[in-house]
Image 1 (tube, rainbow, N blue to C red):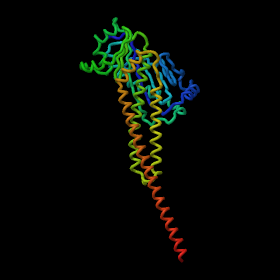
Image 2 (image 1 turned 90 degrees about the vertical axis):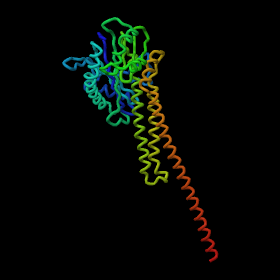
Image 3 (image 1 turned 135 degrees about the vertical axis):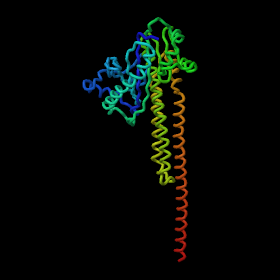
Image 4 (image 1 turned 180 degrees about the vertical axis):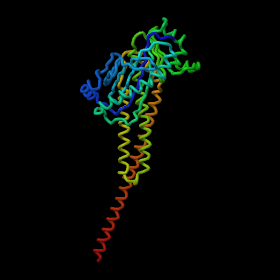
Length: 368
């Protein structure tokens, strides 16, 4: 497969905070345009996507030249900042050549070099917008990455059906970053993630990468794939957070010096309640961030990505662990109620004893 006009998009996604104050981000960046070179900042609101809160789009580099394997490459780097704490960096470059060259160049040369560039931009950006971050995430930041290969034109005319017939193996190798041919079963699994709207466009979605054949810039498809990756990032991040917090809660319970006193549980219960409510709020925010408006094809692309990323399984895991937090909290509440009831019984017994002693004392006094 000879590509005469194509582009590769590298996505790097990071969870950087519980929340980001976007108006404050815009104000902070406007103050330092000449200082940082962040010379584009605007709210992104495409017609086919309805954001609950539109992310801030920043242009970090335009036609930046880098030298790779004695070859000069021009890259563009953008960033999107979302109010629920995620930041996405998109680095892209044009490409011409064979699919084998593209696999080698993107996976072994371009991606590692781009990641270094993106990390530098990320750290500078985070330093600048730090006042807008609420509860910054601990380092190392939780991250995801994804690659989208966009082919506008081949060296010969071909439609979507022809792509699958002639280049199924090559595209499978490309989006799995493999040099050797894959098995028929793997190729079939990859191509189960395909979608076409017109005769001359094609999307093939897999876990780590996607292939797009379209004569025009597929911004709608790119945004949908990006959003699915954001969901995966947040679900995986909060799944790991819940693992740590549940483990810490059990450790706290084991270390309690006086577990039969209600106040011994208060700190653990407060923490569990905050964790549960906080994570539920963030997950709801992510789920409600993007709505696809009147476009069933984009819904289909999203469904393919959601299936490949196993989003429903991750959601189930998070829900189960949130239920586990609720179970621990309920058990603690039972213990607190039981301890209070026991304490009340003890006090009642003490009062009865005191009453009896007073009565006996009065009788002795009267007799005496």
